[in-house]
Amino acid sequence: MITNEKALELLKEAGVLLEGHFLLTSGRHSNRYLQCAKIFKDAKLSELLCKELADRLGENKPDIVCGPAIGAILMSYEVSRHLNVPNIFAERENGEMTFRRSFGVEKGQKVLVVEDVVTTGGSVKEVIKLIQEAGGIVCGVGSIVDRTGGQIDFGVPYYSVLSMAVESFEPDNCPICQEGKLPLVKPGSRNLKV
Image (cartoon, rainbow, N blue to C red; front, side, top):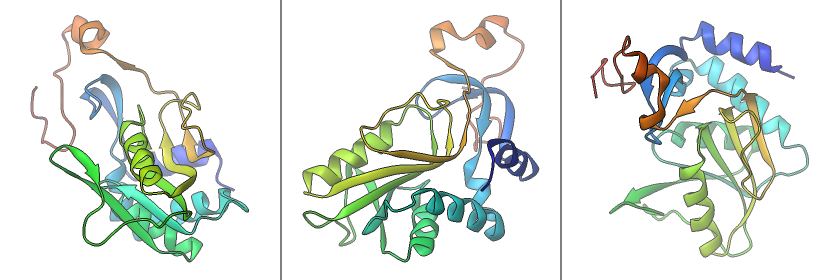
């Protein structure tokens, strides 16, 4: 089993953990950012972490794995490979999470929803709603990183490889902004000031 400490060490070595002043997808600000897409540059690392997540499910094996595009597409595939079940992804169309490309879930089908990193859980909650509206049964949620330190509740079992409380702030109450020393950066956009 990979401990929290070992998982953090692996992510630091892979350059996944960044420190500074970041604009998160949720709109909140943080002094730390986990660039989880970098995990999937390294096939061995992604295999190791996704296998660990699949192993943590124990007997709670799904019929299918689903993740929100784009961040969880590769993860959905890799977790499903270790579980030996199919995988799909949901994506946004006109601002709404939906199934496209002939993807969907069948009534009564047990679905594991995966996401690389959970901060507010917004995308995961949208995918859960989509699955439930289609008649699927969400048997759990899994992520490589839980940024809430175990504080989030999806109403189903939640599994993560690394759980850590990473502070995030509403833009109006961001102490990093108030200090004024570090520019706000939107990760993945070459230090684009926002």
